[in-house]
Length: 302
Image (cartoon, rainbow, N blue to C red; front, side, top):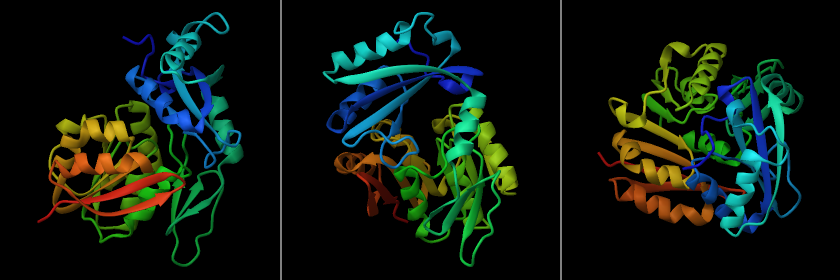
């Protein structure tokens, strides 16, 4: 059993940010080592605000205050080094004690309006005047991840160019960007947004209110297996490992004639993930690549 709490930074006002810098070729092995220890990690690459050196990838884990080590270099930080050593991954590991205000201030410094396909994602504190043909999402990441800046999220947004969906389900909603995009794109649609983290659900609620779509999105921590009904569109911006593990429940939520948009998948992992999803009744109907990541569109026949 891991000594880490998977609750992450959102469970406390103070939290520890542990960052590991690894060679790009070792990133997958490092990510798997973290996942096997029960830890979710954030990827830092050339698409993110804090860019690593060329040829390197950063993996960041957030731990709440009970997991903090009283000694520099001890506790969770030392265990993370040991995990990577056991996996044969060379990593430079550093730990920083942060708080929620530090997190918000950093995002306010770097988060500017960005165009993603037909959408413009704009921070709530910086007014943006929409141009013709633009759909503006007003977002405040607050205490949850997700501003549309990472390639995996951009792929999901770009893959919303299919037919209108009357209903949608955003699995692992984070800050709510995908669910809100669906509600804005299709004014007659309604859906659900779920996340295992209650703070992410609350941030999604706040962002839905900013975009005046809160009445059409049901937000909760309901486990995917307990979600009732089927949806015309299911969105899973997760990881290859999580998509594979959740494949039975994800596919069961796709209505006849509906589709699943799956992202968070490295290109070299995509065929294996698609095969698992196909084994649960879906067919591959499209894909898109960006910066080493692939988004899949899986369809359920009528």
